[in-house]
Structures are given as C-alpha cells and as structure tokens.
Image 1 (cartoon, each protein chain N blue to C red):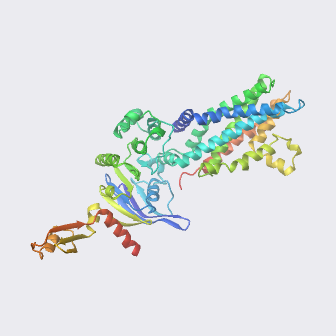
Image 2 (image 1 turned 45 degrees about the vertical axis):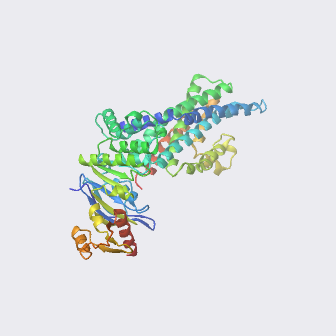
Image 3 (image 1 turned 30 degrees about the vertical axis):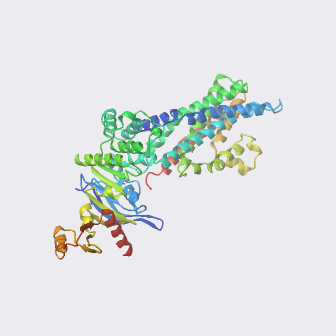
Length: 283
Length: 245
C-alpha cells in the first residue's frame, strides 16, 4: 500500500480553481518533491493531504485513511511543517516542541523532546524564547515540532525557504536520514537544486500535475547540445542524452586540427522544468 | 481532557511570558478605575457614586477580557498556530475549553483587582455577602467576556477585524444596559435591545446588590441569565471555529 494516493483532487475558491484534478501516488519511505512556481497550488495540495481543507472533488488517502473522515486517527500518524514558522514566539523552543508533542500520545514525551531537539541541533538554545531566534533557527524549531511524535508521513511546505545554503544542506541530510528510517516525506519546493535530491518529483502548474518522475528521468526529457568550437566558428547541435548519441555526433568531426574545444551542454533540471511548464502553457 | 489542560497551560505560560499583555490586562483596569475616581471627584457631592462605581469597574473588566481573548485567538490564526494545532490533532472543543481555562485565571484576577480597587477608592461599604456576590457577578461577566472574545474571533481573519466589533457590541452595551441611565427611561425597543448584552444582566444584579436588604431570590434569575451567556457563547464558538477550510 502506498503512503499517499490522490485521484482527481480538485479545490475551487469561488470561480478560482486552485487544484484541477490532481493524481499522484507516493510510496512508503519515499522522498517526494512537489515542484512548481509560486501560486501553482503546492500549499493547497498539502492542506488537502493533511485534512486542513475540504476538497471540491476527488479522493485522498494517506496511510489508508481519509484525511477528513479519519482525521483523528490520521493526525496521530502525520507530521506537518507549514510554510511560516507557526510557533509561539513568547515560549521557548522546548515549550513549543513539548506543546505540539503533547497533542499526540507520545510516550515519555520529555525524553522524546530532548531527542528531537538534539536531532535538529537545538539543544543549546532549547530554553530560549523563540522570538530571540533567527529565521533559520525558527525553521529548525518548526521541523522539531513536526517530528516530535515520530510520524510515519511528514508534509513539509517549502521547508528551506529563506534558509542559508549550509542549513539547507543540513535539512536535506536530516530528510534523507528520516527516509532511510522508513518515514515518507512529501516536500514542496520551488528550488530545483533541492528537487534533484528527491526520489521522485511532481511538477505542479496552475493546479495540475504536468509531469511525475524521478529527477534523472525528468532531466533526460531535456536537450543535450554538442558545441564544437573551431578557430573562428562554433557549431551547435542538439543530440540525444546517451553516450552513444555523443559518439555518433562526434564521428563526422574526426577531431580535425582546427577543432579547439568540444563541449557537451545538458539542460539542468530547472531548464527542463521551465521548458515543460512553457510547453504546457502553449498547450 | 488532558489536551484541554495542555492548551490551558500553554495559554497561561504565554500570558506570564508576555509582560506587555500582562501590564495591559492587569494594570489597565486599575488605572482606568483610578481615572474614574478622579472624574467622579469633580462631580457635585449629591452625585450617587455607588450607582456607577462598581458597574463601570465591571464594564472595564468586561471590555478588556473580551478584547484580549479575541486578539489572542485571532493571533493564533494569523501566526498559523491555530491550523497547526488542528493538524496536530487538537480538537475544537479542546482549544476553546483550553482558552477558557487559560483566561479564567486572568479574568478572576481582573475581577478581584477591579472590584477591590473600586470599593477601596470610592470608599464603598458593603457586608461580606454583598461583596462576595458582587465578585461572583463581575467574575461571571468576565467569563462571558472571554467566551464573547472566542466567539467574535471566529469572524476575524486578522487582529484589525476584531476592532469593528467594539463599536458594534461593546459600546452599545454602555448606553443600553443601564450602566449610564436607567433602562426604563429608554425607548421600548432600545430597552429590549439592551437585554441582548451580558452587561445588562450584570448591571441588573449589581444595582440590586448595592441597594441594602437584597435577597438572593431578587437576583437569581438575572444571575442565571448571565451564567447562561457563557454556555450559549461557548456552544456558538464551538460551532463557528473552523477546523477545515
């Protein structure tokens, strides 16, 4: 059984269609990335998955449960890290984590709070009020709140937005450790260097999924260009992405004396995603 | 029930750790009652201070308890912690009951402090039973104000949207609940409208209490109506607090 199954999920706000029949499935222990520009519907989709909004249509099943009908049971098994900090500024990091942990039947809560504060490297600042924290530290407290009850599925809405590269790298190390221990992660992001770290990604545009695949396979949908520079000219041609394609493309040149450089340029994930979005826009 | 106490404990910790809120909620009623004393001192000696002192002190407690609770709950929504509480499994009734319990201590303190200061400053002389009953009335009004704050907060998406309810609900109650003028002198429709506000019933009991020789039978019906406000507003709030968009 998959951790998440979504079919035909739609959400309308008046005439505005925030989600237009989203279909996707996420396996257990998978790091699944939801990629898309601002306003694509990423937060709406996550809210639909955690039972924070009532869909206009379609079906959602998370760990075999309906997020609305079975919300009491499901909410014990999922973790949620919203886009904003969503913390109590006047309280300490420890109090925040303990408060959200107490919502669940977490055994030995105090010990578990200590563990998760250590895991998110917050132990030294655990007693400080959250309002004294930097944006990055607040994100770590928010992550700790989402992890404290050891959920089986964690939904993270742009967890590394406005986070420095060093902390971002630490976050992703944490995500991978969680996935290795069997936790399913559903992460929304608009950063392609993060999306490439996911096991699979879905590209969301204007409330519709336009592609779902591994980052590697998505990159293969892009173009590889062979650029052959001579002393006074440069030839550029689009070739396939496989080594045999490169060999075939180079064969006619025979590496003549005047060939001074040969370069192979492959589209990045960002370029491929942008081109897929553009293609979808054109129709 | 356990999670209700978890929320109540968190609300209390937040109040204690927020000096500005504490000063506003505790010092403000005391300062306002003191200003009232200065104002009353300028009036002719024939002015019936006892008629107004305790009701105005009760109104100050009513207004601040309403405002603080409504804003605190709306802040939960704007900060995203309300949604996070729901997604973490806290239920509507637990959140509301937790807030009521959390603010109960504050409301009690406001009631005691406001009433004690009014009695001391205006040199009012009541027997023990009357003092106890006056405290019960102001306390019940404070609880109803907390409930009203919770209920109104469900209609506001940000703190600014709480303020239109002040001229809509709080200010009319000053004029129509018998606080300033006897309700019998109001037009019939205004008299009836005044009955909608919890301050009307609180003032009704207070006026009976400050007259010598009151009996419990005289006040019990108004006291019951005042107490029932809390229950009705609690039920309304638990219906309107939205868990799902």
